Length: 152
Image (cartoon, rainbow, N blue to C red; front, top):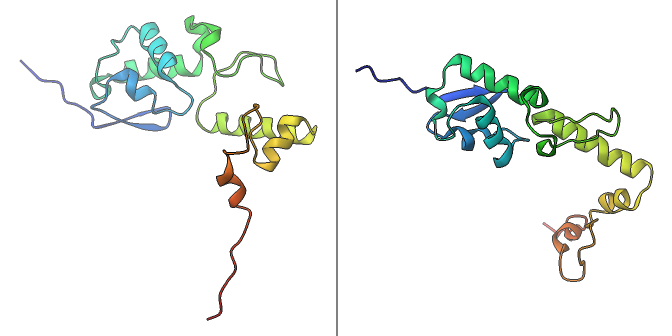
């Protein structure tokens, strides 16, 4: 009986994942993929969630990358996507890695440019979703102040 060799590092969508991890946990290491989306990927790809990432074949890895790149083609529901009704295109997208960072940054810049309440609060480093500020969020305010330097 021949044993399968485990790959200790597996690269999926330009992210290194430890080969000893189960598939659904390993997929969450990719920025932009959470637990529920990872479970949906496992269900659609017909690979068991408990399968170790290191034992996957190259064909299975390519299938996973295709599902992550085009989730709507594989009948993953729209409510699982992280960018529904995109501001510029109106399309339903699922962004990962640097695309997610870039889009979030552009959204914040747009909010600041149009001088919305949320943009103004982001600019000041204050909470923008109605939280209290009397006792909380003190650490963000302290970064702007500088201490007094002493003589040498």
